[in-house]
Structures are given as structure tokens and as C-alpha cells.
Image (cartoon, rainbow, N blue to C red; front, side, top):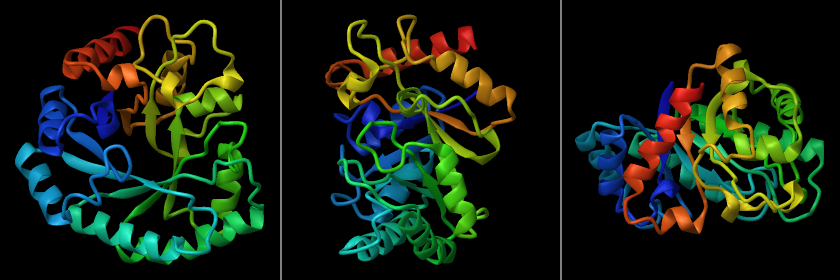
Length: 261
């Protein structure tokens, strides 16, 4: 398995310290963010590139362009600026998340957004990583629908999916698409009382023996299907973020996954 680290796994660390931690954990691939923490607005692309080079890590994505499927307002300008930053800092891809506030986005609008983003990404040598969100209010919950839209936009060479184990579980998806998957996000939910439809980002911790999302089964299925990309830790839990020693907690979770996959 190839593990990667999303900066949200330890948002209290500076970018330099985060890169150093990831490398010590044996995760040479990292994701930076433009929200928590907001690296894009606080550091120049050249600073990020130099820090990654010094630490010996590769930036696999910036997380995230939102809401990518509503191609209006300032989104085109924001998309171009984020793509420019990604190319300049050495990132290989942009994670793209759909509108997630209860409003519907039509399939035609989804295709139109993917069509508009395609030349922007291609010109910079970037992959668009489409991440369906499993929340009931999400405008794109299904990976199957995302693939249909990608094909309709002629984007099979430009786009790949993010398989997020949390969102896969929330959406109730049964089908896996390892051949379409470019990145896997892993996190676990251990609260025994929360209903699936009520699960939210703050419930997402690290993967351990109490996990309710079936992370281990999902990982086994993806590997058996030929997926050979990174598995990136993406916990949103405030309890994880408050840990004084995130490195040890992440190492323990990695060991649990390795021992049972």
C-alpha cells in the first residue's frame, strides 16, 4: 500500500512540519489545502514547492475546488487561479468537490462544468480529481454519475475519481471503480450511536478496530480491482486535530490498516 497524508490530518502543524512528519511516516505523497489549513492564501507557490523539495515529498493534489459543478459567478476565475498555483507549486492534481447545500445541479450543468475545466487543466498538465460527496444534501453523490458526466464531456484522459471511504459509505454505493480511481481518502467513524444519514465531517477520525465505515473491506476491494494509487489520511475530527502527537496516532492507524488488509 502507498500511504499519503492530507494536511487536515494535522492542521496545527506548519506546512514544513507537516511535510517532515509525512516523510517520517513513510508517506512521500502529500495533499495541501485551501481551507483548513489555507496554504494557498498564506504561502506562495514557490515557497510550497521549495519546502516539498527539501522534505522529499511530492504534492499529489490541492484540496479543493468548490463547487466545481456550478460553473458561474467567480468560479471560472477561482479555478484558473487555483490551477495556476497547483502547476507552480508542483502539484499533480486538483480535487474537485460538488455543491453541497441541498440545491440541485443538473447533469447537463455538471457536464458543462467538466467541459469548461478540461482545457484549463490540460494546459497545465493537471488531473481533475472528482470527489462525489455522500451527504444527503450533496448535488453529486454517485461515482457512477460522475463517470457518466466525465465521458459525456470527453474527459476520460483528464479526470479521475476520488474514492472517499466515508462518502462511499454515506452514499450507500455498492459499485467500485478502481480503474477510474486516482486517489483514495480514508477516515473512520467510531461513534456507535450516530445514524449514517447524520454523519458529518467532524465525526471522521482515524481508522481503527472500531471503524463503522468498512474501510478495510473498501481498501481490499480497491486493491483487488487493480488500484495502485495512494491512500491518503483525511480525518476532520476536532479530537484528531487537537492531538499533541499526531504522528504517533497516524502511525498506529497505518499499522492497523496494514495488519488487516
